[in-house]
Image: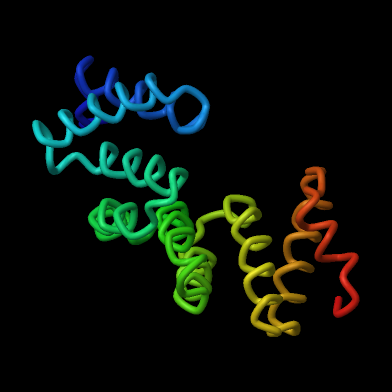
Length: 170
């Protein structure tokens, strides 16, 4: 299709980063340190690679470095501004410190989403943030939309959504 495929070297870097994201940074500290050193060297060699920055931001976010994660994620969001996943990831970097910004990012993710089921998790996270801010009517809309889509598609209802449904304000 005229798209360039990543080299074997880049695919190796991506695989290392994905494995750390999936197993968690706290699981095996020596392995995590080694992986982060590999990823840092890859970023030095390929500073414009959006996926290296994306994986680095995910790793940093899991280890509690939201500010640094956001710095790595901003170039990705600029390139992928029409992708809901990039806005969801950016929202996660704001959740702890500035929930209003996180809410804005989640709304942007909903706005740019191509399919309704790609933002189901984002709707739940958005509803949780809205509920914390006592914005119950907005949270109710997100919960209903998420439940309706899940029922139509036959998806299971996650525990976080069940908790929101069981809350007194809903």
